[in-house]
Image (tube, rainbow, N blue to C red):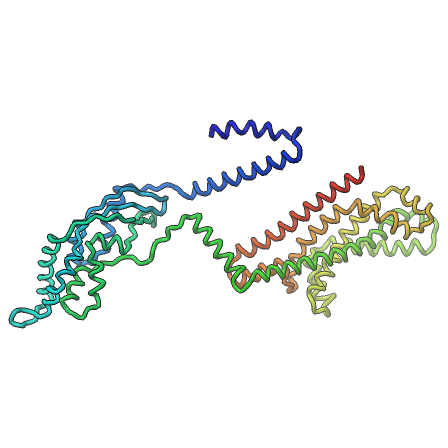
Length: 468
């Protein structure tokens, strides 16, 4: 931490934005971004690691209890052998949900002795010397006597093994793997598995005395971070890779862009016309009224129509307008995409009209007079003098309207159009997984808006430089 404290003043001094040039600011931004990512990764792994409360003494106790629970109730030989097994836990490593211990297991290899003396067990099948068969209890009694001798003759061995402990319900427990159970009972698991399906009754009696169970389903040794990452990958595969569902997102995105661009063009055309009518009435209405003539009434009529259009569009939700266009006005049009283009275009036209009207009203009256002095009529003046200047003024705002329009098209699914949002919802309905497809849709919109916002910012700076 001392090193970090020493570096901070240097970074702050270097980052003095009053004297920093553009290159330095980029370098500092990269350094800060890398530092933030490094700290975030460190915290994730630090928090994920947690701390284990399992001690070596607890591990030994859990080993004994775990092996004892693995031995069948009637497996006397296995139980007697397990009592002679000694565990030495050298280390315990893990987190608060899973630990791995390095254990030295000291045991008697009675399994090898049983294999050596298997002929004696098989011979019990022949019965007594006079040929009478031995009863089950008598066979087991003889095997118990043999077992005492086997245990005395068994070689003492020590092997190192990894024991896994998992915490369930707040309690630690041993994962009873085949390896740890087999060593703990002197290798008789191998013997049991070799004779469990034997047709020889004597061997069946032996099997009942050495029956031991172990777990075959390995515990999940992944950390919570790894689990989350694997789940994320599985979600991604389910929602996008399986059945090539990513194509639905791509097709929906292309539909969204198509609707947005066409709607914007329609909106600009309507907006220019409406803005020209309204601004003409605002600027020349009084003068035309004084002069009289039919021109004033014509422009007044169209001005009222434009005001009603703007009021209706701005006063009703766009989704309601879309439904009205699709189910009432353009019911004969079967292609929902065309209806959506018209609906969003008409909606955008009202807002674009006000943008252009504000731009036209901001132009100095002298510009109109200059156009007239050049011999232009009113339409030519608007076309060659006023509109080009208006475009320069309102272009940033128009770009912002494009961004808004892009997001508004997300309701196109109401009329059966598979746009970007609808595509994400369809994937959600098929996979029953809402997180991945909807977050992906949100990210696509976010990236588009961020890119467009950046481009608008560049455009505004360039326009400001051109004014100077």
